[in-house]
Length: 132
Image (cartoon, rainbow, N blue to C red; front, side):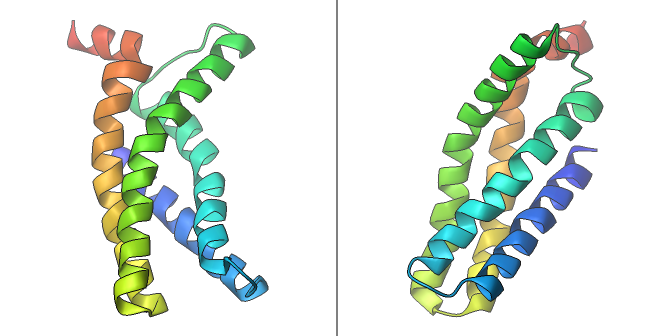
């Protein structure tokens, strides 16, 4: 399930980037498109993973908000990895194809790391329950 949701998240992320670049070609277009793609995929992946991968039930809205904040915070590190690889490909090869290829590579690396971080630090109660 995680791989399916990671693929859906990647498609959402890169799809939003492509749409953004088509709509806006001004200053910092690439950088803003990368941020927009990330912002679109993050809540989608959180909801799907929380429910279907980690089978985690929030206690209430406040708990869910704190959990999303922690999930997002863990994503800072993996997003930095993803952005670095994608933007590195952009700087090295200066083509949209290379940038998106770097994006895919960066997303895969980031998703692998994100799963481990979420299992260990975010959805802890669910991970402990599954281990018992």
